[in-house]
Image (cartoon, one colour):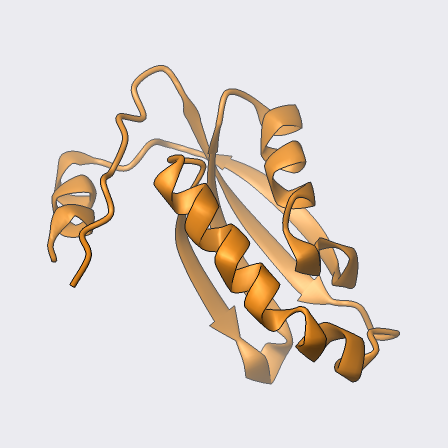
Length: 108
């Protein structure tokens, strides 16, 4: 198993993004971009720009932790995701991950 490094979040802000799938989303177009979305999420994780990511298919929603200097940078990070155009996103500033969470993320 490959262990992804967890960059320091000292001096950065974390944001929890709650996004819901737009009603007019074309399922075929959405599904065609699935692999691109996963690749970009992996890149963002290795860059320390994205942390946790959860999906709720039943609610057509997703939750993404974004690590950025400010909300503008968090929005720019989200815009690099191929799925971004399919979602209505709300961005909430949060406190950075605590020591226990960072230790959990470092586990293989």
